[in-house]
Length: 67
Image 1 (cartoon, rainbow, N blue to C red):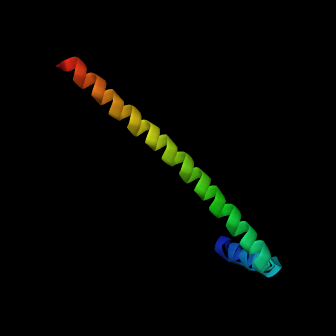
Image 2 (image 1 turned 120 degrees about the horizontal axis):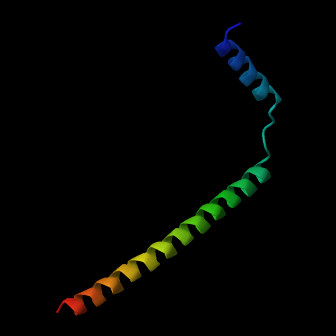
Image 3 (image 1 turned 45 degrees about the vertical axis):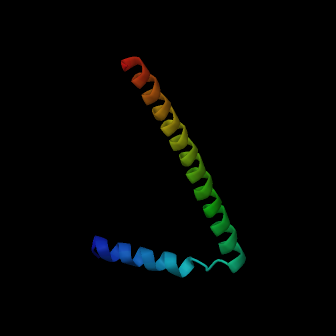
């Protein structure tokens, strides 16, 4: 039996053993994933906002020194 045939049979066995999750479990996991995405996006937004603010204030001070 070739490597690919064994892998396909393993995948079929796993799919036979797997059970479908309930709608409640699915919605709970979906909420957790969306919450995590929102938190990571919020943190990234705050970091970007701070970086833009620091870059903006850095340009102001360097422009004043040059004139």
